[in-house]
Length: 79
Image 1 (cartoon, one colour):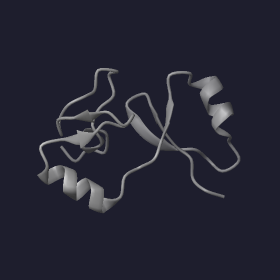
Image 2: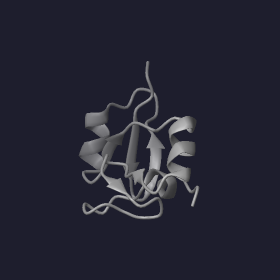
Image 3: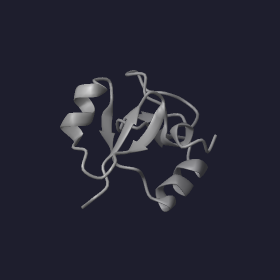
Image 4: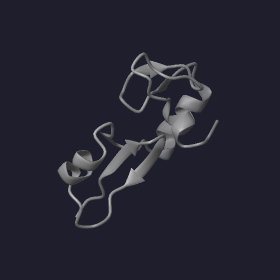
């Protein structure tokens, strides 16, 4: 079974085995499913002038998108 990752309450979380995304979203309606970037993507963004936000928007490495989501570098505590 593949891990399901979500961004909820300011953190990246991996759902426990047996919990479906639908069950989690019912309890945490503001959560979104995310695909955690690879180490190579993070390294590339760290040296670029931009970075993906957790919802896919392009932002400054230490910024957040117009939807209020942080960059991956911020969400993962790298900056």
